[in-house]
Image (cartoon, rainbow, N blue to C red; front, side, top):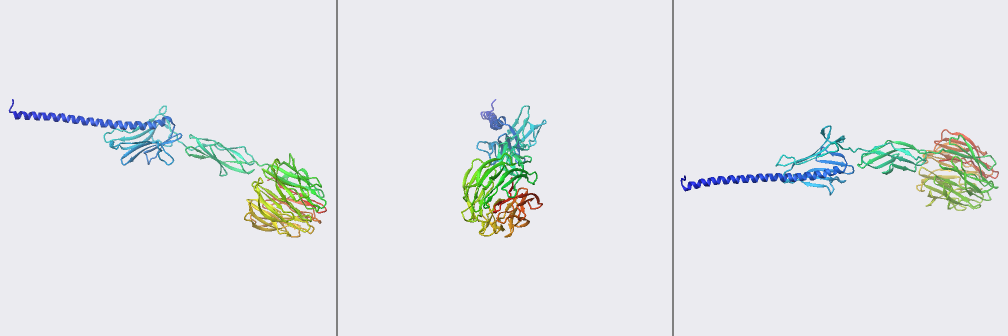
Length: 640
C-alpha cells in the first residue's frame, strides 16, 4: 500500500541505486579482473616469448656444436662462458638503471660481444627483479656446481626472473641432455706432448719429430735447439741445419692448441755425426824431392803411409813442396814430377782412399831460384786454388765445388819475385763466410789484402801488407788467419826481419797492433818467417832473434794479452840459404809443432794440449834441401 507518492518514489530510487551500484561494481570488478588477467597473460606472453627466443639461441649452438667447457666466475656469476670446439659464446645478464639486459653471442679479442650477438632488454614496466644465472651439472644423481674437474652429467642453466605481479619464475631453465642424460663437458687442458724423436742425423743437420694429444686441435709446434727457436709451424717435423759436426744439442718442443694452452715436451739430446779425424804429414829422405805422405790418428798413433808426393826444385835452388789440406769431407794434396813446375792436384776421401786427379796446377820459378807453388784452400762447399803459367808472377785464382767440379776462374793474383830469386806467392784463407787473398804488384814488397764472400763474389780491398825480402833473395810474406770473429795478419817494414802482428774485425776494421814478431834470414838469403795459429781462446805465434835459427813459441790470450813463452823451436838453414822453419798447427784438441836441430834436415814433431802443456814427441819428419839452397820442409794438418 502506498503511503504517499513521494515515499514510494524514494524507495524505488534507493533500490534502483543499490542495484545500479551493485551492477556497476560487478562490472568494474569484472573489468579489473579481466585487466589483471590480460596483464598476466601479457606478461606471460612476453616473458615466455623471450624465454623461447633466448633458449633457442643457446640450444641451437648446443645441438649443432660440441660443448667442451663451462666457465662461471664466482665473483661475476651473471657472466657464463660456453666454450665449444672452435669458438666461445658468452651469456650475460646486466642491470642498466634497473633495466635488465640479456645478451648471448661470440666475444672478440677485446672481450666484447661482436655485432651479431643476441640482445634483449626486459621491459622495465614488468619490474623484472634480480635475474641471476646459475649452472649445475648432474652427476651421481645430484646437481653439482660445474667446474674444471667436472667430467660427465646433465648440464642445467637457470636464469631466474620474477615480476611484482606474480611469484612465477619467468626465467629460463635449460636442461641439456646427451644420450641417457649424460653430457661430456670436456675440460680443455694443455696438450699432452710426447717426447720428441730425432732422425736423419748428419754432420750438420737433423730432423726433430713431434707429436701431441689434445682434445682441441694443435695450432702450432715450436722447436727449440739449445733454447734457440728453430721452427714455428703446424707441421710435426722440423729440419734443423747449419749445425756443428760432433756436437751435442739439447732439444725440446712446445705444443700449443687452438685455445692457446701449451705444454713443453721432455728434453732430449742429439749429437751430430763426426767423421773420424786424422793427422796428416809429409816427410822426406834427405837429398830427395820425394815427400812420403802419412795419415795418423790425431794423437799420432796408427800412422799409415798413403802415397809418395814429389816436390819441385830447380838447378839454382828454387823449390816448392807438395801441399796438403783437409776439409771435413775431403783430403787434397799436390805432387810434382821432379824438375817440372807442374803440381798435379788430387782429392781423396778423408781416410786417404779413392784419390782422383782434379787438375794440373803450375807454380812459378825463375832462373835465379825464386819460386812459389800453387795454393789450395777448401771448406764444405768450395775449393779454391791458384795456378801459374811458367815464368810469370801471376797466379790465376779458380773456384770449384768441393768435389773439384765446375771450376771457374775468379781473378789473377800476383806474387813477388826479386832479381836475386827471393819470392813469395799469394796467400789464401777460407772459412764458411769469407775468402781472403793477397796479391802483389810486380817488384813491390806490398801485398794487397782482399776479402770476398765465400763464393768469391763482392771482393773488396782491406789493406796493404808489407813483406820482407833481402838483397840476396831471402823473403817471407805476410800471414793471415781467421778465428773467433777476428782477422789476424802480419806485415813488415821493408828490409826488416820484424813482422808486426795485428788483429782486426773480419771486415778489416778496428785493427790493433798486438806485438812484433821477428823472422830469421841469413847472409845467403835463407829465411823463414814467423808462424801464427789460433783457437777460440788462444793465439800462438813464433818469433826469432835476428841472425839465429831459433824460433820461440809463445801463447797469448786471443786479444794478444798475457803472452807466455812455451818453448824454443829451431829451424833449418843451410850454407847457401836453403831453409825451412818450424810449423805450428791447432786442431780442436791439440797443438802441433815441429822443431829442428841446426844444420839438420830433421824436424821433430810434437803434440801438446791446446794450452801448450803435456807435449810429447810423435815422430821425426825430414825436409828437403839441395846444395844450392832450394828447400821445402815437412807439411802437416788435421781435417777440421
